[in-house]
Length: 125
Image 1 (cartoon, rainbow, N blue to C red):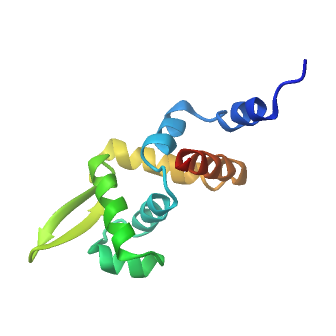
Image 2: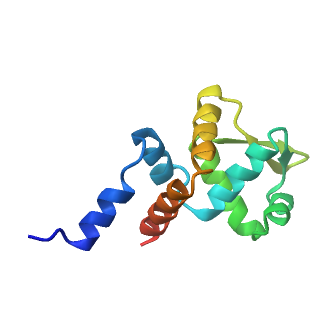
């Protein structure tokens, strides 16, 4: 009996390090979050407003603020008030930064990126 295409695809796409698979499904589950984390990893000492970050990554400020707040809640980013403005930065938590580094290093592999895209799109359903 032939294996249904959907089952084969799901099996292939789930063939990832379990910790990174969980990271993608539960923390980096949108393209904006992926963009934000890549931006902050490339600029690890940056702390800025959602409006400025949005300009840097080419996204809307409203979307950036929403997604950044979710990343704060998941422990990947931090927020503090500066003159009553929320300013976002990458977390200082070493374990989270190490996990982010592992994720972004894995993203250098095209096949891994395809799997991440698959899981993000699948999570949007």
